Image (cartoon, rainbow, N blue to C red; front, top):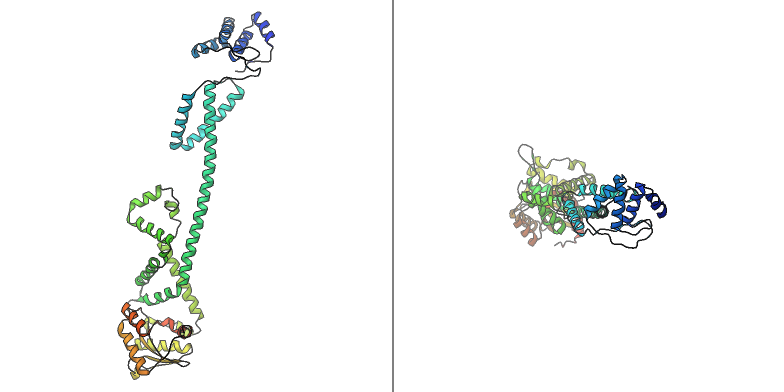
Length: 420
């Protein structure tokens, strides 16, 4: 309730002496607040409120009850001429309010935001448009201040969260670049592994177990040299083995170990698909670059061992070699005798469904000595055993997949092979 402070002190006293209860109440209120040119004096305030109550003022009776309830003495002080108020010490209330706000904020952050906003505006309304209790006003302002802090913290949190998301997205792009780069640098070898490991069973089904094992080997022994990729794969492995880790990830706030964040990073399946796609694109490009379309259309799996020898000889001829199959004449284990410029090479051709062993390497060595050739090579549709590779390395025999015959002459020149 607002008290009219525009009447002069003299006019109020004159009106009060004539028995005006409202004037008596106004004088009492001025003594109570120390405004309107009157000092703050609780005794005089009570006296005038009593006179106003006797004159029939209900407001004065309420003020007397309030003063009796407060049970406090108001000392006589000098105050400014403008309207002001004295704050009542409420340190205990302040402490409990802060504790309560912290607890509620932890449990119900959205609820605290709504309550604080409502309290803030209630305090503003009471401040400018009505009577108010100083302690209550102080508490309301505390709530409003807490709201301001809440909003500021929320804005900074949103900004920090956006920055973290941006950093994580950049990290994911960098990791994918590393993966793509490593795959592209080894795509030729991967393509060869695919050709060596993909086989057809007796029913015409393609068996790719060994090809997928080769991809996993590449991931674990080449890509995992990059620590970031290794970390991601280790998390995935632990996640598949322990359900407890899933709970940890879902409840964690750390960037990489947060479950929702971790799902954005490439996993093993994603990397496998990258390898398969890159090899398929490489093989398609190689196929388009091959001018001998007839050779590309041959189904290797359907060729007999003799047919495979002729197929290899045709590839050599298509790429500038002079080549002939010698199987029929039985030239000491030589399947193909070929010449490119002044370099003579003997080839052992092996069409197997399992890895090629030492015997083929030994036959190639014997054929080279018999024909007095410059080089010896074994050509196959399959992979080679570790012992075959070791023997070939020490004897200078080349172990080739049939798809490498097309560029074999370039490899000879590029590596400046010693011919004897």
